[in-house]
Image 1 (cartoon, rainbow, N blue to C red):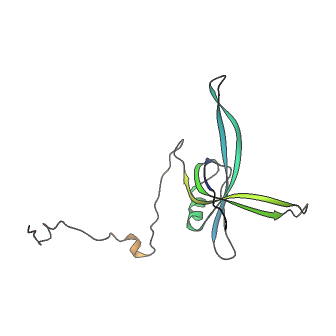
Image 2 (cartoon, rainbow, N blue to C red):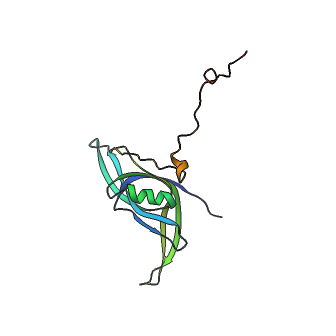
Image 3 (cartoon, helix red, strand yellow):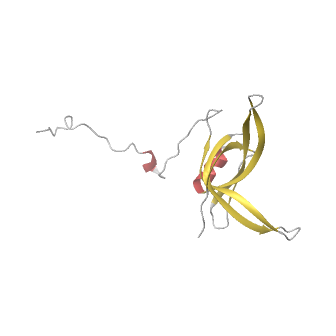
Amino acid sequence: MTTRIPVTLEGNLTGDPEHGGSDNGTEYARFTVAVNDRRLNETTGTWEDAGTVFHRVVVFNQQARNVADSLHKGDAVIVAGGLRFGTYTDKETGQTRETRDVVADNVGASVKFQTVTVARTPKAEGPAAHAPGPQMAPASYAGTGMNR
């Protein structure tokens, strides 16, 4: 049993997302988010940068394609997901290394310091995606009349 550790990140992309597919056909996008820590200097009363932490993020399926098409280096993003820990063997040294990634459930452009344009994609495929839907009219216009 694994423990899910929820994470929310707010930062900037350090590069364009890498978009690809796995051997089983699952699409993914990988990118790094730089989170700048700012602290109030109580002596001077001003905000100062206190360091940057870099987080590797991976997102899957349709959202991976949307991330790759929409987000670019320097864009401010908000990422919500869970931490995933792993290990691998370094090929050069033979030592076991640990990894930490955020598997994103949701990725969005932050509008804190920038504006964005949203283009919605239909949920259905084919002609039904663009159908106007059912037309409704009030009962008094439909000729049914209302009795109380």
